[in-house]
Length: 265
Image 1 (cartoon, rainbow, N blue to C red):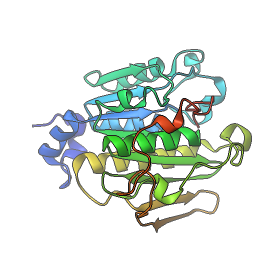
Image 2: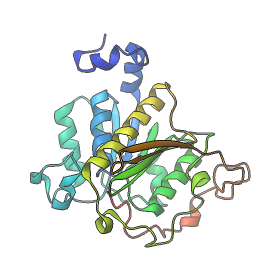
Image 3: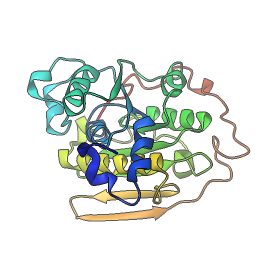
């Protein structure tokens, strides 16, 4: 019988004792422990996901604190994975945490993700988002994608055999075509909304329940107080997930991922 910690979700028909044990055996790679990765890591840890891989090579900065809620002022200057792991251990010391102080790139992404059941994208560089999409498709691992800026954001879930990010957006935007959060600004609560939806999506996939956002994109506009979900099909000519895929490995990146790496929101 599960402990009191998880009782409120254990009593849900979609979870139960079998589902809780399934979460305990599950593993999730969180790429980027920032505005999105913070709520994802905290909620997945609180839900009892047994193993979390925290992947980030940056240090905590004072400007992070308006939205990266896993950190405190005393963490400024510390490694993000180290500070985040310390916070999560206070929440549940029994969880297995992999502290991976790495910048994701073509040469290491497959190795970093290989051991995990599911990948959560908490990055802010479009080149890295497409790299994670391509790697997840090639590894046949589910990926929960998100992006956030100013007052809103979007979420979609890529599952093996379903539409991927390139079915929705064929290529990343041109460099400097989309402003970063540093340039355009961001409301911290928006990252909380989008990160929480990502955590929900991850839990649904791990439990095998509900309807993940596969082939659908969740879009939230906090300034207008509006949310919508739009359906999109699998592209029969998608360069990575279609039968005619021309992207069959990650050599096309040739280490040309943005020097910003996985700059975090």
